[in-house]
Image (cartoon, rainbow, N blue to C red; front, side, top):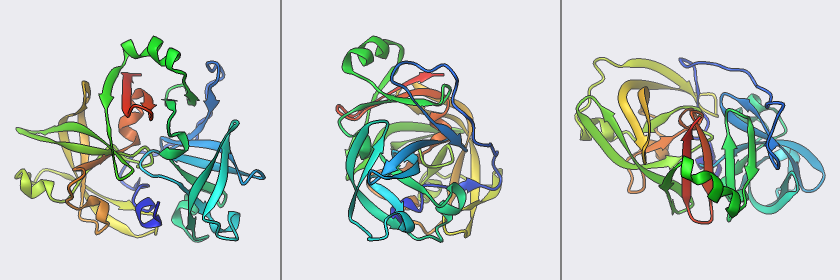
Length: 281
C-alpha cells in the first residue's frame, strides 16, 4: 500500500455535516467488537507489535497498514497488528508525524486495510457500532434478509458494479469500495463530459485533504445511487478537479463509494467469496 493512495481516502468536507465521536451501544451481540466513530469512520482499538496500544481506522479502500513514524521507529516493512485476539503480519506504509491524518485522529492511529480481514467474513454495524467476524453458519442464517452483491478484487482494489441516475442520465460502471472516504460518492473527472452533465445548477464547496490543501468540489443531486438492489435516493454526488490520480479516468472504476453510503446499511463483507451483503438499517 502506497501512502499516495492512502492520502486520497480521507476527505473532510468543509461544506458538509459534522459529527462527534460516538460510543458503541451498551448491548452487543456475542463476539462483537465495539468501535467508536468519527464522521462515520470505524475506529477500533488495536495493538501494534504486541506492545503498543493504538487506534485503527478501518478502510476497505486500502490494504496493508499505514503506521505513524513514532510508532515504527525502525521503519519496519512488516509489523504485527492485533484486534481482539486476531493478529496478523501486515505490510506497512510509514506516515510522517506531520501527516494531516494524524492531526485529525491523533498521533497514535493507524489506517488499517481490508486485508487484515482477508479470508474472513466481516460484519460492520454502523447502527450498533460494532464489527464481528462471522462463521459461515451464522452468515447462512442472516443472508436471506440481505441484498447479495458480488465484488471484484482488481489489483487489491475492491470494486462493485453500480448505477447513478442524474436527471435522464444513467451512469453505469464499477465503484471502488472505500469505507475510509468521508463522503457518499465521488465520480471520476471524465464523467461530466462523457455524459454531458452541466454544473449550472450545482452546489459548490471545498474539501480538505490529508496534506491540509483545499480543492474545489461540485455536487450534483442524483435521483438514485444503486449497487445491486440497494439504492439511496436524492443524494449529492461529488465531482472534483483534484489532481490526485484516483479521481482521473481509468479502466478499473468510475467512482469511489464512501462511508456515507455504507452508514445507511447493515454491512457484511465476505472476503473469501468476494460478496458484499447489504440490508437497510
